[in-house]
Each structure stands twice: as C-alpha cells, then as structure tokens.
Image (cartoon, rainbow, N blue to C red):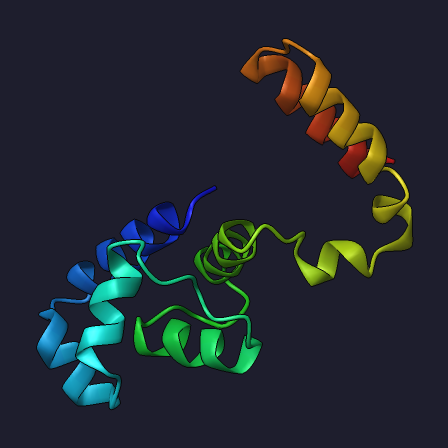
Length: 123
C-alpha cells in the first residue's frame, strides 16, 4: 500500500466530514501545507499512534470501530509495517512468514488470498 492510498483515504474521510482542507486544518490546528502533502501521498503517515489517533478523532472516526482500525492499518501499510496489534498476537505473528511466502511466490487469486486470511483467523 502506498502513501498515496493512505492519503486518498484521509482525503475521502475529510470530505465526507463536510470540511474543506483549510477549514479542517483551522478547526483542528493542523498545518494545511503538511495535510495537503499527506492527502496527495507526498508525505508518509505519521508513525506516532498519538498523532494518528488525533487525526482519526478529527475525522470523526469512532475509537475501535472498523473505520478506525482500517485507518490505522492503512497508515501501517503505507509505512511498510505490520500493525502492532498483529505483531503482539504471538499465534498470528508466528504464521506471518508463511503468509509472506505465499503472497510473494503464489499466483493466488483474490479468493485464494481471502481463504488464507480466514484460515489464519481461525488458527
């Protein structure tokens, strides 16, 4: 996932909240220039969970909701990281190398990948 994908998600959520970039930044005391770069994929998402929480809250995402989790997952992926909650689950983390090998070497269909994800969840 690229920085651009995270930025596009951020922009979509901001627009859905009914705010222009400048109004959003003024309301939440964010730098409009940096926010513009973030939305255009020119600036990576912050590594700080605190800053991501600040952004998610400003966007109106409910803490712990699917949208909240998706936001954090997109940020982690854009930074080339596995989300911390996945790494902290020992059962899931020990299966990650197999997932990486499968994704790297397989010509798997989307359906095959979804089945793999479901198997990992049940493990």
